[in-house]
Length: 130
Image (cartoon, rainbow, N blue to C red; front, side, top):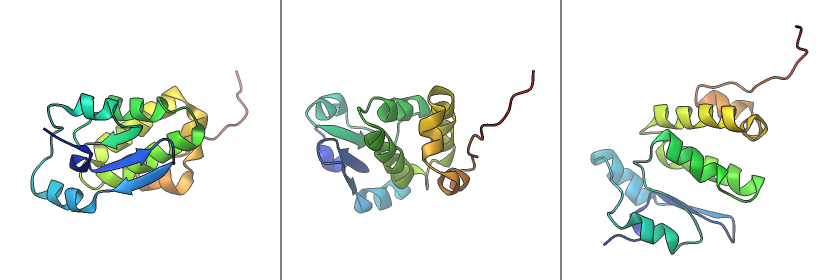
């Protein structure tokens, strides 16, 4: 049976507080981590977002867009980057590419430097000539 401590990081929705499980991340580098079999029950019992490390880009996107506020959505995006970008940069980049298609304003809110660090660019608005 798993628990919250098995995750790589979490964001408490009611407090907006992010916790990174450094020990677990270092352990993750030695062996790919898999969610515990009861991860859905763990997530249901927690008021926030947990990052396990084996999510695909679509699952990561859903963790971002399912939040109620812009601040929480940005917090989850930062949590994803902070916990798994070192080990799964392609999944993180693809998650943000999906976010760009889903919500360009939220995507841009991460800022030019952040997006550049994951190999992406801010979407610039300009005149459209038809």
